[in-house]
Length: 194
Image (cartoon, rainbow, N blue to C red; front, side):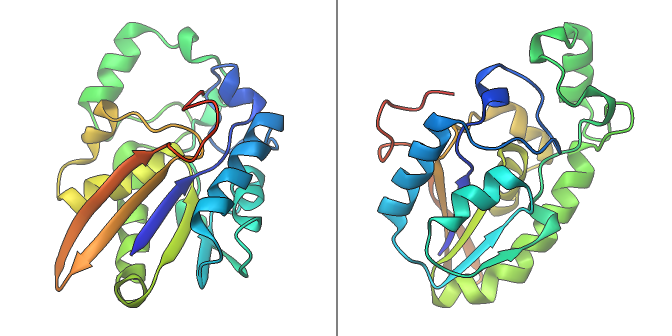
């Protein structure tokens, strides 16, 4: 099974900022969330992580050697890094949601992110067919992996909510990929707070 974990909360997440490639640590609540993830997932044989601190900190509690893979890094918001989400105009959000090739100035498009995440998923299929592989990543790459498993366009990301420290599970039945669960948060104390 391919088990996708969104990192625990950071202060920037709690403040509603476009975090992207910025590299803040987990806040105190995020550290608690990472511990809850570790408690429910135990010690998987293989753990892959985005290289950013918030994902590595979440992955470190899983008790396995962590492999870093740049393909699981968050979407680049370019010049918008650290900008409050509320400061992006409604017209811009509509353009972004309707055009997978749209990218913030100096940033990355949803289509480019989807391409790199699909390649990363393809590379893990054999390993995840025989045992559990945990990937600790970010909101946008996990949504792209869900689009991959469902065989739908990358724009589906705009219709999905994914909580910090949530768990998503993808199974394999022969050549068929199956979304087993999405946005599991029952392991988190205090619910799915941002």
